[in-house]
Length: 382
View (cartoon, helix red, strand yellow):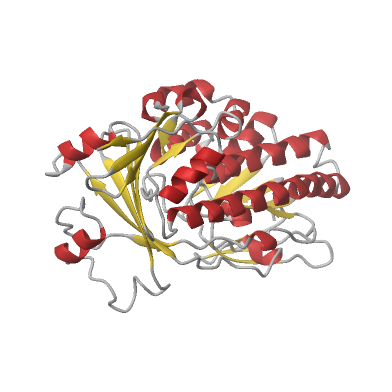
């Protein structure tokens, strides 16, 4: 048994933001993370734009604004939209500036890991199962290494898309929405690097076309991350339907991929249906981030995850959430009711954006989306 107030499952942006905010407020907690050590880091995901109204607020509340400024790349906030990846038209060239600075995922993680005491993160603790407590008892956490933990006043699932904690709250699972994303990286020694640098500069380029997109992002080390999105069956990456080592096949999908020498990572987009982002209260358990409201990539996911952490800690502080079970449950429920609405909106906006990106008339559909948002639209030949 343990006397700690909060167990946080997962050391991603949501879990680490929550840990730091609890640290600042003097609330006891422990983070359980499946990675074996801080040096094990999944580098997929590239760079994040941290919004002033959401993610930056959580960073500031954790007292980490100065640290964030060391890594934030305000000169990487440009955005271009092209008609295809060859000759065509450029429709948008936006400077988003201070509202949307970029930061590499690894740098954001470093900021938080330096701000959370080492002893408060248990590495190599992948959650295998969580069981509901009996007669008011706290849930029991069972880890892949055979150990268990229980007795927490609150268990917070920050364990991503396939959250184990979510099973205590909802039977809903992520659903495939028809898109696979293939990731690659273009380093300075790649023969196409100079061409990529001239095209993308320090920001992001989205090349649109019917039922296909290619997104290029500049990272802090100067390299470029490529995301190629294609509409394909769910088993696209299994069963030999595509050979990722076949240069000709890959260039047919993405002309700027140059001689891939290894199997490129691919992932299916699997959001939660917006209607599933709601559940009845379960004492002592809640969710934040992707575990609560997984949506398609939209530039808002990490921001909303960190905002969840901020709102949850604010409610716990407002209601003195650990003075009694009733105060805790009231604080958690008020957080959840707000989060349900925000999360469902996040997922729906992501799905609407996907529909624009993969429409038959893309990228004109994306241009129309920007116009509806009031973004300045320019059109030039490239």
